[in-house]
Length: 494
Image 1 (tube, rainbow, N blue to C red):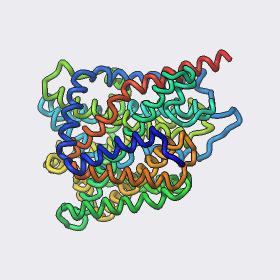
Image 2 (image 1 turned 90 degrees about the vertical axis):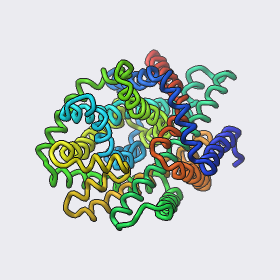
Image 3 (image 1 turned 90 degrees about the horizontal axis):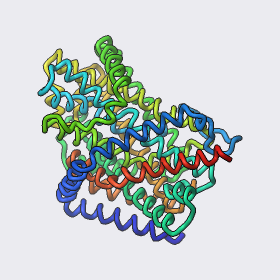
C-alpha cells in the first residue's frame, strides 16, 4: 500500500520531533515549556471553557432523547462484554498515570496549598483538585471525541477519522477536505507525541520500582533495559487481533490494580480512608461544574503557576490523547447506545479514579498529618518513587511493588498497542483492521519518540512537550461536538 501524503507528512513531523529529542533532549523540553507557558497565559480561559463545554454536552446527550440512538444500525449489539469494554478503555485512557500519580499528585498539591490554608483544609482541597484533574472533565473529553467518531463511523458509514465529522456535516467541498485533512494530520502527531510521553512516564515508573525492589541505584543502563523490555512487550500483541490481545492484557492489569487498591484499603487506616473518600467525593460532586470554570487568575502568583502547571496541563493532556482514545473506544463500542456509551466511558472510570486517589492520596495525607511526613519528602525528591515508598510501609511490600511494576508494564504496553492500532487506522483511511506490518511500523515510530522523551528525563518537561502537540485540539474538539449535534438533529428530523 502506497503511503498517503498525510501519512508521510505526519511521519516527517513525528520523526523531526523524535530526532530533536534524541539530539537535544533538554532543548526540546525547555523549548516546549516556553511555548506552552505563553499559550497558557493567553488561552487558559479557553482551555477550561472547552473542557467544561465537553462535559456539559455529554450530560445533555446522556439525558436527552438522543441517548437512545445506537452507534450503528438499530439491530447492532456490542462486540465486547461490559467489564472487558470498561477495562480496555480505562487501560488505554489512563492506566499507568494512576500508578504514577496515585499518591504523588495529592501530596504535591498539598505542599502548595499548605502555604495558604491550614493542613487539614489543604489536604481536602488537594484531593478535590486531583479529582478535578482526573475525573469527569477528562473522560468527557474522551467520551465526546469518541462519540463523534463512533457516530459518524458506525451510524453514518464513514471512516473512523476526525475528518469524517466535518465532511459528513458540510459536504466534500475543497475547504472541508482541507480542514478534515488537517484534523487527521494533527490527530496523528498529537497521538504519537502524547503516547510517547506516557511511554516515558511508564519507563520512569517501572525503573523506580525495580531500583527500590532490587536495591539498585537508578542508572542509564537500568532505564535502557526497561525501555527495551517495554518495546519487546508491545511488539507481540501488535501482531494479534485487537480484541484478543488488548482485552486479555487490560483485564490482567485491572485485576492487579484492583487487588492492590483493596489490599491498601484493608491493611491501611480503613476508617480514615473511607471518611476522606466520602468527604472528598461529596465536595467534588457538588463543586465540579463550578471548578471547571475556574482559572485561579486572581490568586497568589504561586497558586496561579501551580494551577497552570497541573490543571491546565491536564486538560491539554486529555485533549492530546482524545483522538487516540476517542478512535480506540469508538472502535470497541459499536452497537452501544449514546447513553450507554457516555455513562460507561465517563462515570465508571471517574468513580474508579475517585476511589483510587481517595486511597492512595488518603494514605499520603495520613502520613503527612498524623505521622512524620516522610512520603512528602520522597515526592519532593523523586516523584517516580512515591508509590513504591508508600507500598514499603505495608507488609508484603516486595509482592505489592512487584504487582505494581507488572501492572505499570501492562498499562504501557496496552497504551502503545492501542495507539499504534489507531495510527495505522488513520494511515489506511480509517480501516477497522489495519495490516499488521503497518501497526508494527507505527509501534517502531512510537518507540523512537518514546526514547526521545526518556532522554528529556524531566517529567514536567515531558508534559510540556505533550501539551505543545495538543494546543490545536482546544479548537478542534468543539468543532467535532458541533458537527455531532448538527448530525443528530438532522437525523431526528428525518
